[in-house]
Length: 282
Image 1 (cartoon, rainbow, N blue to C red):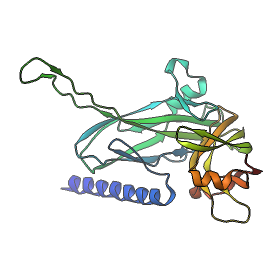
Image 2: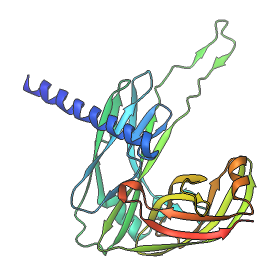
Image 3: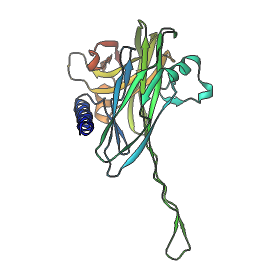
């Protein structure tokens, strides 16, 4: 009986945590991410070695699903995209990051609308040099096996293709007094297959990543023309191109006008200014 009550207590805690994270997501737009039928919150974890944390999974589909959790290395390119790195090609810092982060469980089976917490902690890092270490935690559904069958006449082989959905979130470990600064330059208008884009170059200096949101405003106006969240510059690069996707109305408000492009820390970290550029966009 005591064990049953404890399990109910843990389930209630996980449900409460998930509800809180989803509520925050509705406000800030960042702490929860969904792919397929899986919801994950938060979408970014920072550990400083003092204590661990939890990542909450929730199956928002209609069928029971099993998920496998693993760690992988990704590197950011100057276009801002994250590329998968073969384990054999990892450097010393990436190998250290893989051995530094521990987590459990590594496989979960979730009924519909059932939350599950994944405990994330650190192995001892006393021998590691100060710096920022990063792995990406991958959550992927394990497909159910279905028999391959013939049609009623036995003349046609039918194979069901099942898409595999996965979500990755960065797990960032910071050791020591790490600092970073950033700068913005060369704002220009462009266009891709999805519509107009405000492009700019962002540079970073220091011993850690920077992360936050971009806000584009006109001088003297408090309401931004556009806000884009969740933009990082990781330590493996010193600069990256940032693309802010615009609507036609937003592009018309920016093109040929003086604007202030500001890179802010996340609201939960105080929302302080990381970098700012005041310019006329051509």
